Amino acid sequence: MASNLERKTSHTPSAFIHSHCNLTSESQTASEYDNEIKEFHFHLYWFQNNLASHASAVKLRDRILELVEQGFFQVVPLKNGINTSPRGPHPIGSYEVWCAREDFARCYSWFVLNRGPHSILIHPLTREEIADHSTRATWLGTPVPLDYSKLTPHLKQVSSQYPELRLGYNAPPKKEHGN
Image 1: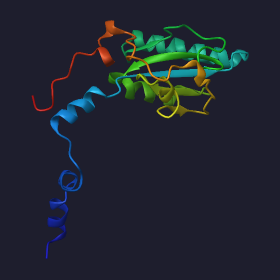
Image 2: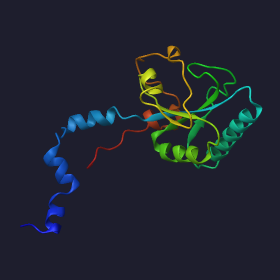
Image 3: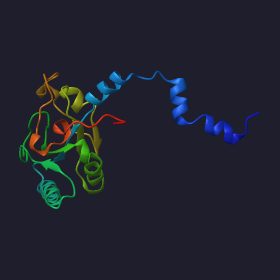
Image 4: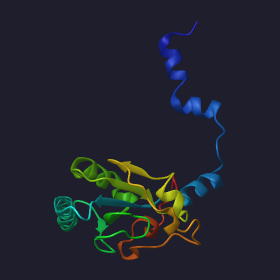
């Protein structure tokens, strides 16, 4: 009979995966890397007719700009400015912060700790705009109903927002695992 130590070491997570799961080929793994989500939007919402809500949102935006300047993270706020009225699918005051996967954890963590009373939609940037804003999205705070009729169900390609940063979809290709 095997000892507890022998049972534990012979059933490592890797051994379990290899013996119980269908493993993919290298070409399928390469395809998974190609399909990986590489950019995200964080949309911060406020009530555009509430001065305190607007002021709080602007204060957060200003802090984000300071942190970018200090090198804390490399995100891009406000490409389209501050939306003081409904814009696209967003029904109330909002602004977006673009974030590449390279800074996602830090950006997410910062918003978790600093969003205050604001709701934040976090969604990936893929060719599926409606899915990105609905089934693939997550929220910090209370979700805000969106107008999906303003979105395109399937884009021909993912839009390249900030190619000059060479992050996200514009990052240099990573060397394959093991090279």
